[in-house]
Length: 560
Image 1 (cartoon, one colour):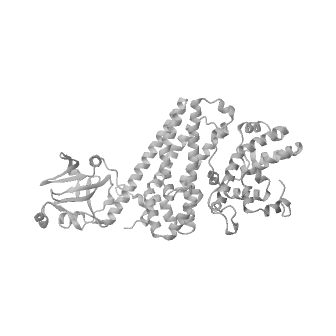
Image 2 (cartoon, one colour):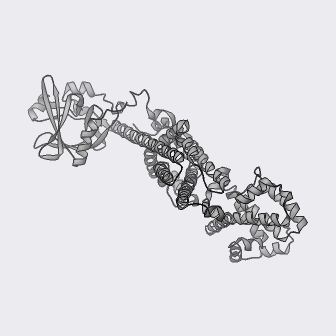
Image 3 (tube, one colour):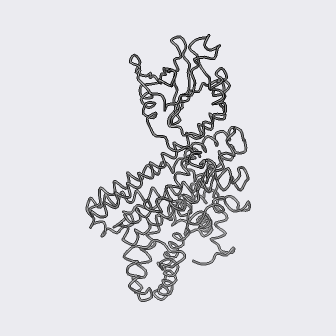
């Protein structure tokens, strides 16, 4: 390729084209090669948005078609050093048989015909990626982004995205398109199915990292840079995001090792066990639990802030309109880590089913079991955090003045703190105080306590009840809204399948509570949950998860 000068005729002709004419030349790479200035515009776009190695390799390989034998020898050395050598800065994907031959034979010892043929085969392998980049350019051009002036500064994506993440913008090619026909012909039907599932694992992991990077580059960093949210707030919404991306990126890098075996993966159990078992698995479990357990709170915060902060709302709407979001809203992207965790066990089990080697199959099944344990742990952490946030909300709204008719109860529970215990279950109940008196309450099961809260406006009331007006006036025979289950037992109501009795006994007498759940299923859940041994509460465990690690900042935004 010759250097373009302003006096070149082709250059001048390019400048005189109409906008429609300019658009036409971006329809194919062949048309682009005939228009130097258009090609430069496209190359500029690729260098800012993607890995430029494929298109540069494609154009360099194209030169061999017009070179003499002597020039071919000279240029192939440069071509090899730039794109084919394993240490090349612009290294590209190379057909397996070409790579094997270059490992055995020095590039300069190949015949001119071999050099031309290898350059052509390498060029063909880059074609798909180049066409994808060209399609992306045309897509941005339709939105008015391709011909905008660069005077306003570097593009957002160039400024924000790390080089390793730029590669993720395009979907990886299917392994069938990369593997040679000779390799494919030797695979059994079962092995073909196995490779398809492995390819699905790699491709979906690639797409997952791409969407995680959207959280980082389209939302987190711009929000921080433009000082719309503080780093403290952002770390609470996206806890350990950088670490999670790093961990998933390692999996994407492992997937590239398949190139060494002709794009056919022979063994995969070792990297899977390294990822999901042992110390690496524990670290992944910790990061995933930290990130996923905050997502409900994060979504509520974002929704609330959008209503109250016009600047924040405008930013979110603008960010969600970017092509990187792929028409997804932030509320749809935040849960993707949790969704990804649910996919691993199924994918790994499907790989194991098609694996013939016994040891390999058992190791893959072990990795799948590790994934299930991680998922179960994360589910527990998510539920625990959601319960804790619910208790903090109830505590913020708690009103104990309704206990005053019973001086004994008021003295015992006036400073009652819901958050010092772990919530096992909650649900709407009807408290039948008498046949004529029924009260709607929220039943909250806190280990050895069942707390009956009445909703009144924005308050959650702890209120004593009495079965007679006279007893209420005298402060006698008051029914406490806090039932100690260690001295009580539950019985079903024979005439109502949704109802149950809580019979509370003590030295001088007994009290009977009749409670009605919303359904038979919920009544059974109250029964089951009341028999569970509760886990240690945050205080009993010596630490509150909202005050530690990435969750330490949640207190900053929770109004008490």
